Image (cartoon, rainbow, N blue to C red; front, side, top):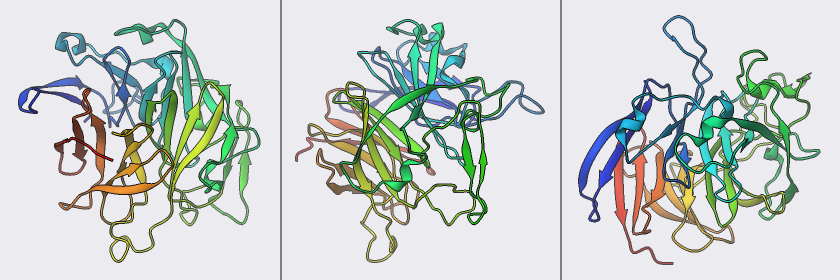
Length: 345
């Protein structure tokens, strides 16, 4: 019920070939590219073996787009943790792998994996390393911030059990507050201690020396949403050189997504580096009509495209290496589009 397909097109975007490049996995989500030309695909699942499932799920797998023979025996990259994976981004200089977790009750975490050896090719991430989770001192939940430019100190804490088998789901291995009953929240102490969470951690992309991170939305009126505050969409930028996390863009809640606010985007999801320096192209998964949104270096937003077919979200937004074609999918219908430039300011 999961996997990936590799689509090959020529310089004029004509279909050359398409092959199944990963199979036997469960609920694969957005993943991300590596500096050495492969793709990391993560399972958005915490399913353990038992019954119809012969293996544990919730891992990252590496896909080789150039040599199909490399993909016939997929092996999970267990050191990158077992959790509900969303996206992956790799620091090409330090070798760090960043990973988002899209989960609730409690909300997921932003992870950093430090390889034991600097990865430089297919399967080199199999050599193990250290998995950590983001901790902003004194901050339980990133949902309390709404002001673009807010900058926070970022630290990293080791994950007690990356397998999520002996000590349960990773996000519950750290201290969390159950807010099902908001009048009487209950604190659960985890062996990992205090941590910083964010609701619906979605897209990741490395560009401009930073890792850009999406927290899609928080709804404190939902009993399963244990966020401290409500927000509709945040894009954060983590700067490893300064060990800081900066609120890059904020998407206020759209109160009329099917009326006057039909073209006002709210819930950001996947993202990629945009066509102008410092910009980002963001796929929306919010209320009402769905859009592709261009976010400038200063955090200004403008609608680039609209899904006029359905209410389904845009997914997998990415540019071709030469920047001349924007590829994007529509999730429910399963369409993949190639949008050609040139893309001007």
